[in-house]
Length: 281
Length: 101
Image (cartoon, rainbow over all chains, first blue to last red; front, top):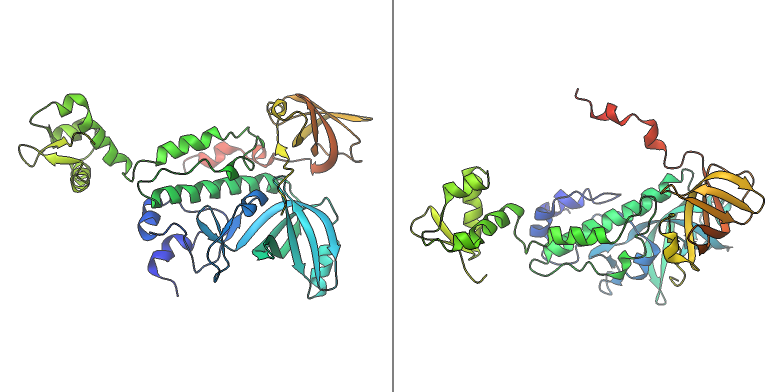
């Protein structure tokens, strides 16, 4: 049921935090939308839900930040609670928007759980994203009142964190394309909650990770070889010099050179120990 | 699905960017009076919140309302956030966590 490439990352991608293994994920997922057999719970804001696109009619799954999403967690206040015979409907307002939630009532436990919630109560809703008559809805399987309000802060931090993780994977999986950090869903959830979190921080991260698919160290070697003083040297740069200047072991230098040579970015000059960067790159 | 009236989270420093719009903020109550509450925002600035606070009022309260100017909010909705909001880490001695075994 689980293919080996899904075990490493997707098993842990459920509730809360993603493991930070960008190079592994980039290799095992060629397609932009990662579909998983395991259904995780993603923390989202209503604004992210409203901007989610659907990934194909058969699956009726939603895609947020390039990731297939069915189960979500939202934290907000209850409004317009409407008790009916088979279900209880209400709107959840989390400051970024309102989404309609339906809690199907089958046993007394469900009814009692919902009775305690009045309009204006902060709740945490775990549910299944659905689309009905063109409108997005949340079919809630758990609606719990928030007792410790640090949960509200924590939820928004989780939304931001998961968004960054998924966007980072998207930009690395896309290879040479520039990461799309300018999407508007960033603006509303990112607010000065308790520490003045600013959107500018996201831009720094995007610059850090948009290394054209090259890992940090390979880039260092390439940068050194691309320096004008080194380009000008007819004989090229000896690997010993690279090792000394970059303070790295010979093994690492050799691996980087091999990779760069394969990419067509460097070439060996007078012998196998001297390398030069390809000009005009 | 309605995202037409978002309320931005603000602290004292951001309030001036949202004057006239709906905002939400958590403040630590320093003084409570008839018709208004004085409190400290998350970035240690004094804010005045006008309206009728709930009784009893806890130390931390979230207010949702319209920003009047860069240090006052006219609150419509008040939510008590308890007495120990965001304070769970200050009670731990973080140095204990990082001492070598």
